[in-house]
View 1 (cartoon, rainbow, N blue to C red):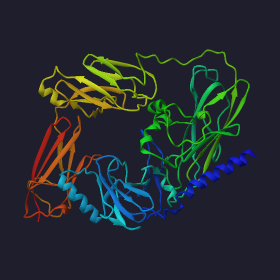
View 2: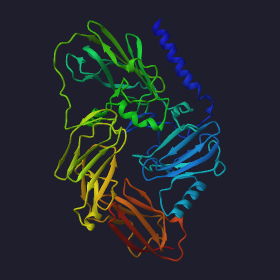
View 3: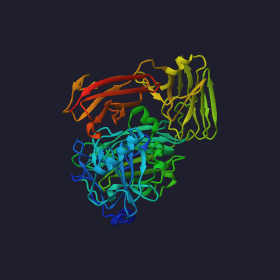
View 4: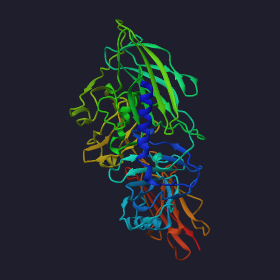
Length: 563
């Protein structure tokens, strides 16, 4: 009887969520079958995925349609992130977002390029528009799919937001129906000791448990013993029909002796809480093993809004001589579910086998400002940089400052300062701060330069160093030479690269007039489209200036002919 009540509760809750969005009358943003490479709320680096990634058959240039009547309220062109994106506000209270675009519809494209030519810059930032500038109808082409920004392959990133609150809503509530009869996969389980008195199999050590698949959607693990407060974590993912992508699940719940103690789902969340993903997952394990384990319990400072009806935050109190039947259910949006069942035996424990305590050099009090100095280097942690008190291993080795390992999530940035008074002005010009955790590929940290002090702010722990960049960027024209006729060419392409501090900016002209060259940072290629401007005469002078992040400069000038 209790199980039936729980089932009815779940059905009514799911139906309520669906009913909230019944009157949206949206269509699909593409005219091909919806196949997803990424789901809403999927676990990503430092954030939840804020939309759906819809596959575009591995190509660019598919028509992107307005899903309902409305107006273009915002346009954005960025080098990273969403790349080219367009926002459409609808009278029903929602705003839809279309990102990683190749280009916009004709009139919108013209408008954006006017702004880019006026600013003499490819990146536009946010362009906010009045509600009468670009009115659109449901089914009208507003853009073409692409691979711009931080995309790793051609696809359309599609979002639905509440226009008033800006909260993001799962777009699958809005008339999108990817084929999905595939149950989620459960890979492994982690059992956590939550305090000094907790034990798992008589040890004060977290335990990774292999999962056995019994049948389609049914899993189990071996029985184990425990005592005290413990937590459960799970490694799970979902696949849709006809796709191999490991996507995120929609909901996760846990029952103890048929009583639900944990539930969360990915119906909606806000951007401001997205960084709390690092408290939902086992961040330490992820950084060390590149595998995300979701905690089926809520830790301190985790204020995510996705949780519902938690009992004691999902933590389990295991008592001597009691047995506990655990059931974990993981579901995708379509309701396909997988179930993991196991037993925990409560067993008295007097064995003293404890994990080694972390008592590294420096204890950090999360609610205090703390500053440390090492020769010419100063580290300043503002109040609440960390979510909780912790120990950090900080030391200077030669010219490298090691600030622990990057295995602790940070709530906000801290400041790292280098005293550069011993360097000459020329040497300081070429210096920059780099993250050198990956020795082969130092990562440029935006470096603020004062007369005697260089500093950066970062949300990453790890190794940092002052490096010198004495090499100018490399510029290589593609498919044309100096004094060449290129009358049939549609574009002019240049490859640029910098192996040290990285590319900062570029400035290109033809006949001394600025031209827009789109920069694909993934391939290092600048592209100019000859349709942008009418060139008079046949002889033309192309000039390109490229700066790296310490202002080393490279310049090329080429003559080309074009009828």
